[in-house]
Length: 94
Image (tube, rainbow, N blue to C red; front, top):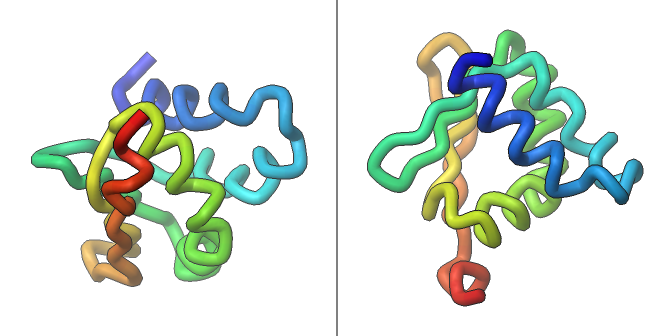
């Protein structure tokens, strides 16, 4: 299992008992994820997938904050940043 799949599976596992929220971020499965210097980079294959993730960003922020994966989220398509989000520090205190 490569790093992209591991990060995706980790986020999906967070919602394994809540299928509604899992469905909100299901398009994450077609993206590549990497993590560096506190930034979780999500590289999407199309703008439609990126827009779907932007709509479900609150669902996506929760596991990232609670698992302390990153302080910021960058969603991009073909190296062009679509949206940049900050994970609130108040969520980082567990």
